[in-house]
Image (cartoon, rainbow, N blue to C red; front, side, top):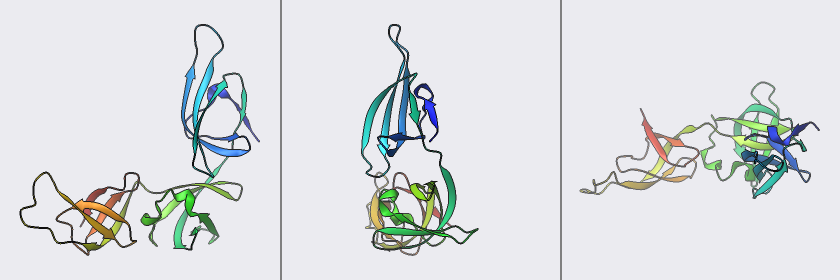
Length: 188
């Protein structure tokens, strides 16, 4: 496994911490006037999702994972997994829903995502920043309710429920932000 000096750790790297891959969320290098330099790292366990803080001496060697990223198309959901296909090789991969962080409601048959692999093991899934989804259920707006850009709950084609402006009706196609789960715009 390749190593890196702790002073070179940066956000987005995958470190081997006690035999488990951890995503670096934040890395701060400190060089106090007295004593040796160190790097404070906030990491997220890829398998459990829990976060932890750890401090490395800057001269310390740290193991990291070399990862490959593949673009894959969503096929379908099973009970505990999402199935994706590589559009070039037609190879399929079953990804645990836990790697999607509750974002499986954005998956439609035409969506492509990027999946991070360490060998054959999937470590993470990156969705597009915004996705187009059709509104399945939306209540009628009530007359007079126009103050301060009011919102109402709408249910999308995948079953995901979000807040949208009151002018949105069933059959509309809208853009939804995959990070914030918020309405972005209506698609013509």
